[in-house]
Amino acid sequence: MSEQKVWVEKLPESCSKCLFCYDNRPYWKSTDCIINHKELDEDEIETSRDKDCPLIDIKTHDRELVKEVCEKIRKTIASTVDLAESNQQIKDQFNIILDLIQKEYEK
Image (tube, rainbow, N blue to C red):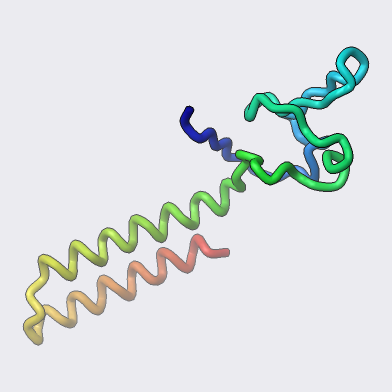
């Protein structure tokens, strides 16, 4: 079975405040996570998120994605641009631009 991930604007503080948490207690005396298809620990759902929670903050996802793309661009530039003196200035300018783009998404 493949790993499931769900990107959300804001992470819930606990499973009990999550839209994907289904309360079966009137019938089965349990609470289930719809995404993970598993029963949750009754003692912890009010105070924390499950350790296997597939929810990911969208800002964290965006930061990681921008970082990954910038690194791929850096590697491509490093492998294709000749390290001659004149080209080193171009490479340095590209790195400065990529650093600025990455810092913009770290906020």
